[in-house]
Every structure is written in C-alpha cells, then in structure tokens.
Length: 293
Image (cartoon, rainbow, N blue to C red):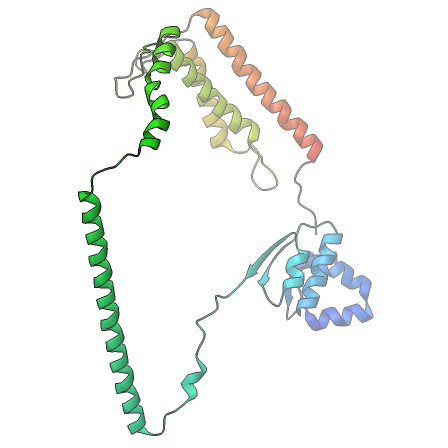
C-alpha cells in the first residue's frame, strides 16, 4: 500500500467504501487518509470520512452543499457551506387563463379607471397636506414668542449665576496658553523625532526576523536569501545612522555617546526579549509539522 500511494493517487468511490466496510474494514481504515479523491460519495459517507480523519489527528476543512452535507460540515473543523440565493417566488396565477376576451377587456378598463381615480385622489390629498403645513409654518412665524412668568422665575436663579462659576474657576486656576504644534509647518529635525525614527525602524526589523516562520509552509529564514540580505542591510543602516553617519543628508540629529549607548541597549533588549517570548510560545504550543500520509 505504501508503494502504491507513492506511485499513484488513490481514488475511493462510494460503492468501494461500502464494499471495503463489509469485507476489509482494516484496509478501509488505512485507505481513507491515503486517498486523494473521494468520488460518488453520499452525504453520510462524507461525514464518516471526516470523523475518521479527525480521529487520526488531521485538521479537516469541508466545503460542500449547505443542505445535503450538513453532517459533514458540522464534523469538520472548518465547514464552508455553499448556498444558492433563492429566486423570486413565481405566482401560481400564471397558469390561469381567461377564456372570455370581452370580459377580460372590461375588467382591464374597470381596473384602469379605478387606478386613475385613486391616483388623482392621492395627489389631491397630498396637495392639501402640503398647503396645511405651509399655512401652519407661516402662522408660527408671525406669532410673538411668549415666556410664561413661571418659566422665567424658575430659570432666573440659574441664568443669574451662569457667569460666576467660570470667573471663580479662572481666578483659582488661570488658563495656560500652550504652544500648539503646527502640523503644516516645515519639518525641523530634533533628537526626539530622530530617536523615534531609529527605534521604530529597529522594531520593524526585529518583528520580521523573529516572526518569520519557515517550514513547512515556506523556506527557512537562512534559505530565503533576499530576506536575509534585506534584514542585514536594514540593520547596518540603523547602526550607521545611530552613530551619526549620513545625518545631515537625511536631516537627522547626531546622538551623543550616552544616548547612543542607551539606544543600542534598548534595541538589543527588544530583539532578545521578542525572540525569547517567541521560543517560549513555540515550546508551549508546539511546532507546525506536516502529518505524513
């Protein structure tokens, strides 16, 4: 069986599965995970195949009809149901025929006259509604605004004291006039934006280097020469910029030796800590490996 699977792609049909289930269940147990194609399989057999693969430790994905393959979709770790949008319902009245043409014509004329009269009535009613609303708006604009004595007496204590809290608060804590940053002003290099740029660039390099995962889905980091060269060039560029080279052309500030030391220590700590956290998580949750068929 191993030699057969290495040379050929196996295909199991629904009838073959039923025949092996009754005659050689152990052979069926070995054939299901090694078969590349399952053809002419009924929904119950699809569900049994997925249950068998899950028991063997495979992570399964099922894509099928959302009505017939419900059992198999529920058994899979990831089930993708394909559903067709229901079309508009057809009326059963299309099969009814009117035999008397004269009666049909009279019915059509009567319905047309009823529709015309109802349409005119709706238009007349909407025009009356618009006219009434416009008259009400004109009357509201012409009426003088009235304030009742009770409302004025209730609002007087609050309106009289409205300005006093702001004046007292301003006396106790004067408003500070801060200089706001002008976002439209011309860029001026400073120690702050230089350090932020270098740290953000180094963090991106560390993120790519630590989070890169190779096998089994991609080639390893050392085998991927373009990525290795890019990371090396970027790392060398950050080191040179931190040492003050190319500062004037790139409009960066030169860092003093003490700040350079702190910067390199922070970058090294970030990379080492990220790598250790990644290794610990891999040790806890395990590597991703391809299960041999």
